[in-house]
Image (cartoon, rainbow, N blue to C red; front, top):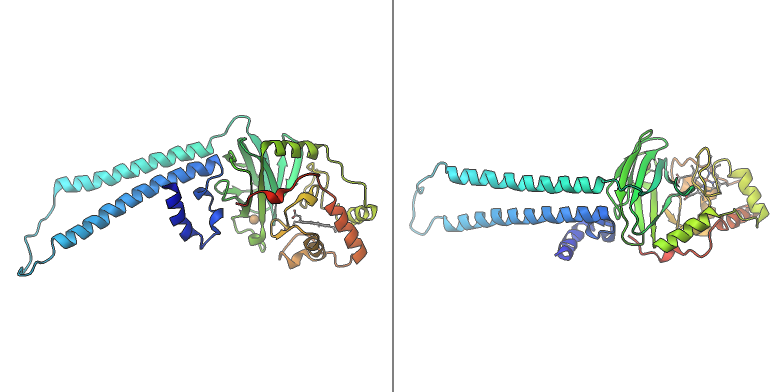
Length: 337
Ligand code: HEC
Ligand SMILES: [Cu+2]
């Protein structure tokens, strides 16, 4: 039944969004499971009501229409107390049931789990930052989570109001400067989940995307252990020098949160699936083009372009950045949601 409803709804929603991204129809977290369950109940009532209303209408139209030799109006009936009480009481009961179910789901999805894995999520024009206070780690534009562990996201903003939304994982949450809004869920399936900013926040709002990589627990633990032990590579001295001279004022590359955040974390950028806050696949060519002219990809971007770098320096720099990675991780094989 769930499948049938998914197919029907999916057909409609596919026009607005690629079908597999409509998370509540294919729940991959405790949050979306709860919402899909609520959706099914609402649909059941909607179908019942439609059936009763459309059915009675058809029946009455056929049963009481003028027959062959009838002329004039039939006897007119005014008022029927019993009927009126019934048709008032039934909708009230339905509304109360739906209210109860909704309230239950709201409490359920907002329930904080003690000891949940906490990540601080900060929106900036036009990218996302993730810090993992319990682990002393930081990633940008790709949030890394383990399967099967309750998660608490503390969503805030470093500038204007944004909204954090990963349809495959949960509902939206506003990112408001100076305030922490929380989202709770437990991821149930490994995957590469697509996320967006859902609050108009400036010229490149539509290009403020990101990914959430939900990893099997062992792989997540390995990622954490390697990331905590991470040392930036010493190979490629020229690339490192170009980075220090041009980029290090805004970009940190240690995987730990710096005292002042200006641009995205570039540690592990070599492992990244996407660049420019999720707007393009990560390839060395895209990386070069981005460094040359980020504004060509994102109007209003807060990173200057570097057209003045020589081709040799740019190649050395990109070689250096591609080397900022943890070995043995292939996130490309994660199923996409
Ligand atoms: C004035 C600060 C500033 C400087 C200098 C700067 N950047 Fe950036 N950079 C940013 C900001 C801000 C972003 C986020 C842009 C966005 O997506 O809206 C960014 C994004 C990036 C990204 C994409 C990151 C991601 O997570 O997708 C890369 C790669 C990058 N910068 C590399 C560089 C390199 C290499 C240099 C030096 C040649 C450099 N940046 C210099 C501020 C800066
Ligand atoms: Cu935004």
